[in-house]
Image (cartoon, rainbow, N blue to C red; front, side):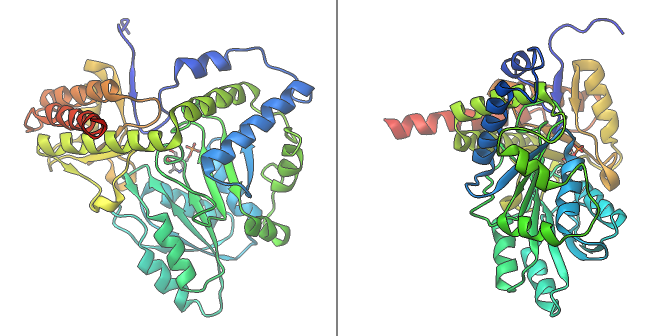
Amino acid sequence: MPRRAGRHFLQIPGPTNVPERVLRAIDFPTMDHRGPDFAALGKSVLAGMKRVFKTTHGDVVIYPASGTGAWEAALVNTLSPGERVLMAETGHFALLWSKMAARLNLEVEFLPGDWRRGADPEAIEKRLRADAQKSIRAVCVVHNETSTGVVSRIPEIRKAIDAAGHPALFMVDTISSLASIDYRHDEWNVDVTVAGSQKGLMLPPGLSFNCISAKALAASKAARLPRSYWAWDEMIANGKGGYFPYTPATNLLYGLREALAMLDEEGLEAVFARHQRHGEATRRAVRAWGLEVLALDPREYSGSLTAVLLPAGHDADRVRTLILEAFDMSLGTGLGKLAGKVFRIGHLGDFNDLTLAGTLAGVEMGLALAGVPVKKEGVQAALAYLAECRAKPARAAA
Ligand SMILES: Cc1ncc(COP(=O)(O)O)c(C=O)c1O
């Protein structure tokens, strides 16, 4: 391959671009993970993650694993073989989580969905009300479905569970929403929050997280699914001193400490607002091209990514390939039943107005190269919106 000048644009919806500060923080000698210096590192990242999850009384555990490991940890720590879980078909990742649950010998009820909307709070309430025996032990929802760019309304689902008077645990996958889209573990009374390092947290892949409520911890005492590597009890006991029961991913934890400092400096609310702004700018670009955003309900639009539907007869993967070859930019592929139909633009993590401008320019040029009939007005529409956002606070200050 000939050398490509300039920086690769990694605009898949995670792993995201790792900022220089985080790369530099990782690039330090590995330390003794049983030594005194490690305790300070361990305590500081656990405390920082609590702030990001917005929990004061939950426990946090950090696994040297991808997000899939944290999915498994949530299930095996809280449930017993043959128990029933209610999951919502929001897209490819919800489907993968449900397949994992079935493989773990759980009884999965999968509420059907069309992959264009989030989990339906009314359908969840109805199903839970019908469960007179209270045999459903957990409700599992993907907050931001990365395959579709649709956000499920977690507070409304919490209300639905409460309205049904149902004791099921509530588990939420925030792998592509944490530190990008507003999320509140305590306030929304979530029992297990699942997260990963490689998206809003701006780290390479390799760390994943469970944030655990007191109710989930109590359930773990009676749960009988086999577990060892994922077991919370030893993780939590060691974590109190800042340590791990096994060798942690030390250098990724250096990176996590830096990423948490960056999130603190910007402020989580500003981080969420930035993602919302870039989501809206992207959707305006898509519409100005004359294309369709996959997400149907404006209450469920994602600040992390936008899935773009192509007109019939146009292959989204061909567009992606042309864009990679011509402009050195990676976009997300259509997953599962969306293969070839959509491409996904990641606008999460370490991302600003100019990264968005470059990304959308690459997409606009790529669509033209691929012969997709679009109006070349998307970038302009996005920039106009960004300018409007800049003018608004200035007017308010004046
Ligand atoms: C919402 C969601 N859940 C789960 C996963 C699986 O995580 P991993 O690929 O890190 O194992 C992903 C990965 O992209 C995801 O986006």
